[in-house]
Length: 497
Ligand code: NAD
Image (tube, rainbow, N blue to C red; front, side, top):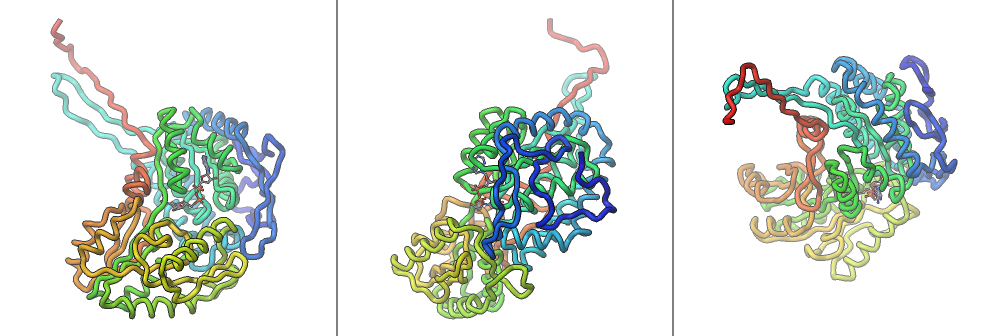
C-alpha cells in the first residue's frame, strides 16, 4: 500500500518523515530482520533518522516482485511509462526545498552541490522519459531470397542498481529512471550512508507518481549482505554499479557469474593539465571548482593539478589563496562551500594521504587540518606524481600540484594511473589543447574547463580501472535494452537438401 497516493497531496519528504520501511512490491514493509540502522548527519553528528537494515531475504523478495512485474510493465505503452517518469521529474521540482535539505542533512551537500545534484536529477529524469519512445529497431536486408530481417529493441528485464553516497540521489536516479522508462523493473540498493536520498526518497517519488507495484523495489542495508546479494541474484540482467573500483571488481564478478551485464562506474584519479600559455585566471577558477566542489568527494573531481614549471609558483599561490578563503560549515547555511566529509573512515584516509605526502617531501601551502568531519581545503606543492596524495584517489578537498616541463611529459604524467575517468587541459591554443586531450587515456576530457561535467545526453564513463560501459543518453539506452533479430520468410525457401 502506498504511503502517498497522489501527486497533489502534501507528502512529508522531510528528514522527520517515516523512513523505517523498505519498498517492495509497492508495499512499505519492515526488513525481514526487524532491525533498523541509524542515519547520522555528518555536520552535527546527530542521529536524524532510522532506516531498515535489509538483508539477503529482503533482496530476494525485491527481485521476486521485480521479476513478477516485468512483463506487464514492458507491455505498457511508451506513453504510460513516459508519463510516470515525467511525473517524477515534476515531483522533484515541486519538492525541491525538502529534497535539498535532505541532501544537506544526510550527506553534507552544500548549496553548490544541492543545486547541481537536484537540477541534474531533474534534467536526467526528463531526458529518461523520452527513452520510452526511443527504443527503435531496424529493418535489414537479407541474403536469402524472400526473407525479411527485423531487429527489435527490448528491455533487458530486471536491473539491479547499487549506488554510492557522494552524489546519492542523482547517481541512483540516473540508472533507475532510464531503466524504468525502457520497460525494465528495478531493485535499488543505496549506500549505507545515504539510504534516504539514494533510495527511499526515490521510492516515495515513484510511488507518488503512480508506478505499478513491483516495478521499483528499494532495499536499504549493508553492502556486504544486501549489496552482495543484489549483484549476485540470478534474476538480475544488468547490474548498474557506481562506487569504488575495489567493490566494483567484486560486483562485476558476481554479475558475470550469472551472465548479467556489469555496467560499472568506478573510481578516478583525474588530472587538470595547465599548459604554460593558459589563461591563468580561467585555469585557477576551474581548478578551485574541480578540486573543492562537494569537498572533493567526486569520482570526476580534480585529483591532481599538473602545471607547467614556468607558471607553477603563480598557479600554486593563487590556488592556495582561493582555497583558504572557502567558507567551511553546516551545509544548511547558504554561504557555506565546504561541508563535512561523509564519515571518519573517509576523513582519516585523506588526512593520512596528506601527512604521508608531506613526509615524502611535499610542502603544505594551506589546509591540512580538520575539525570533526570538516577538513580544510588543502593545497600541496613540490609534489611528484608518485607521492601518496597524487597517485591515490584521495576523494577529499585536497589539491596536489605536480610540475612538468613539456606537453609530452604532461601527457605521460596524466596517463600514469590505473584509472582513466576524466581530465581537463588549459591552453590559449585550442588546437594544441585538443592534441593533448586526444592523448590522455580517459573516458571524458574537457578543454579549458575542469573535470566535473555531466550532461544527460552525452556519454559518461571511464577507461582502464575506472569502469565498463557508459551512462546517459543513447549509451545507457543500449545497456538497459537488448536487440532481438526476427526473420520472416515470405516465400518458400530453397534449402540445399
Ligand atoms: P563503495 O564501493 O564503498 O560502495 C558503493 C556501493 O556498493 C554502496 O551501495 C555499498 O553499500 C555497496 N557495496 C559495498 N560492498 C559491496 C559488496 N561486497 N557487494 C555489493 N555491493 C557492495 O563506494 P562509495 O564509498 O560509496 O563511493 C565512493 C567511490 O565511488 C569512489 O571510489 C568514487 O570514485 C566512486 N564513484 C564513481 C562514480 C562514477 O560514476 N564513476 C560516481 C561516484 C562515485
